[in-house]
Length: 194
Image (cartoon, rainbow, N blue to C red; front, side, top):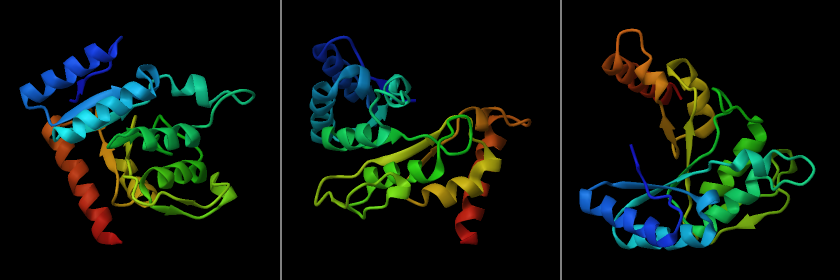
């Protein structure tokens, strides 16, 4: 688990991040939409300066990015996050319970992690973008995924991603450890099959 630093004030957020560091936690979590971009940037700088990874949650995104008439598409929110700072973010799955349109999801996944992205309207990339030396953000596939999704996940997200299995591991009929083994074996098989 990640220690959640999201809080009502920036001061409390930083207090939680310092506490996570004191505990030896390697990863701090922050909800960048509810916490705000300025708070997120402050936390990102703190984490980088102190050897912590910053996992970004996107709670509330659906209220913003799924409004057809007046919303802000997630690809815009993803760009804002990349500029604000973070190491990895929930990015949907295309499969599992957080489904999304495959090409659009791949478009914003590339915006998060690649240095140079060519214009491709079919993926929602409306102009070529060069991020120069701006650090990328790993996409996290999480939400209703399990071992049977592994071939699709490795094809969709490739090597530079985080596959986060919760119930897909814990729900294995033989228990947690066999669930973890099943996920790892499936991942290795899919990678070697390429």
